[in-house]
Length: 311
Image (cartoon, rainbow, N blue to C red):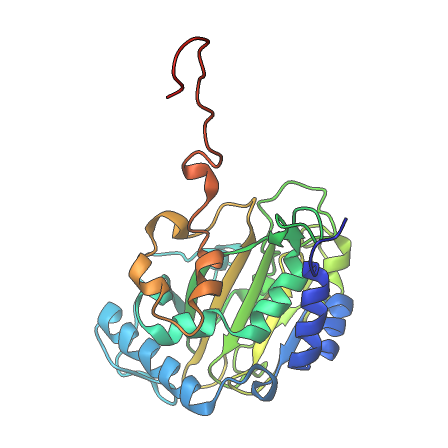
């Protein structure tokens, strides 16, 4: 017997309230969607702040100043480092990645629990437990908080670095996404500017990219502040950046609770930072803190001996 609103009913109401219906339909049909700031509520001021925070962090790591318009104030040299996905095409890396963003500043934590993004993630990853029962809960958890700083160069080369985020999961894949990717474009996304590449409809194949993936890829072009969301089954990568300056983004990566996180967030994310955000309750369950199996989830019975006082 149903005792309360199911998570599906709750989500349907949230999607309607946030005006997300066309974006949910698009992600179901195409395997990705672009949600504008007018829907997510992310402001120009937030985008400016997040971008500057990342540029300041870049200076700390690399040792020179960065601007969106001019890129780095000095030449960047990776030495003999061959890159990661770049090795597929044999090109020189033209970006770097920053991780654990939510430990840096509250602005990143507030973005990580953006209501529109979380509604899409819940749609993709779903819930577990009996629908409508007290034990039903959302299955999504944080996996990692990343940023890519990308400049003019060969990008991932001819391969476009196409991949599916849940590639490590053995086949066959089911209908439920085991990962979800919420990428925030902090600079305008154009093909020449190094936009994300996707293969529309590839999520329906429930497999890793095939040999025809590149010829079917298209750029996801959108203005700064946009949210690009996709499930872990969608084939995606990125185009090389042929224009001056930087392409800057934030990639908040989610997982099904049965999947290991990229960052060890449940064990090592600082508890005081969980409360320092716009929605501590949502942040806490996405962190995965308070898992009942770290301690016994149920009380132990007490032994009662005949002829002796229970204790």
